[in-house]
Image (cartoon, rainbow, N blue to C red; front, side, top):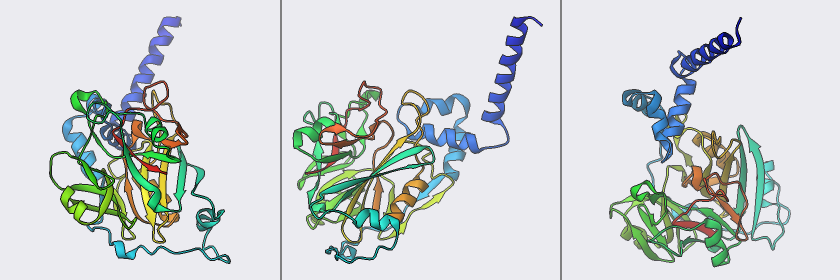
Length: 333
């Protein structure tokens, strides 16, 4: 048999296999592919190459997150001191609470199915604030640069941004953005999903206007979602939650006031399949580390954990450093 004939047969076989994967009776790949692509800003077209809008809509409606319809009850967070003879309920509690008294934060690293996680534990929530790009309104800035300029020990990316003309320049925050009690952005002017910290250092989640947030004593806030845990109650995940698999960032607080930054790197390539975690996996991680209120932040190419002004994880944006321009972030000073 001629080499060219063998090559054509192999190409036909590959095409058949791809067709079966994309359009076959098993919808696992279809669900994963569509929900992952549709969560991104720049790769939604990939889902539309293979599937109709009706198919995409059907998949999205069967895979969604039902968020707890409550606002954080700030009175349920009880700040306290740690006893010297504490008995840990689990290995996860020990990882959180076993520390040197002088520690401002610690980073716990572990691997999961297709991801590497960094859980940053912040013992004094009063040190957690928002920061913004030095060029806010014109363009964004790398989170590591924002962190270095502000003297932050640790930083994670923040909320959504307005993608003007599809350029992804991170110039403007979407929704509500509050920093040090000042409303920096109120894009659209309507109520939105606020992820904020009050003057009493309580992570507060709820749907509210900028003025309502200020009236509640929220000093720093960004807009994103979904809320993952509210008042100790976890969101309900149908299918894969509608968000597929991606690198992710979340912010959370335990009932004892300790704050958590969760950063998830995927195990894939930044120029191809990136890997990452599902919303269910994010909730499971946060639950086992005692999160009482938790919210998902911007993900995908925006995911950055910076330590002492340098990227600590492996960001997957298309720049040489892997970072993208962002309008804001959360820092620990």
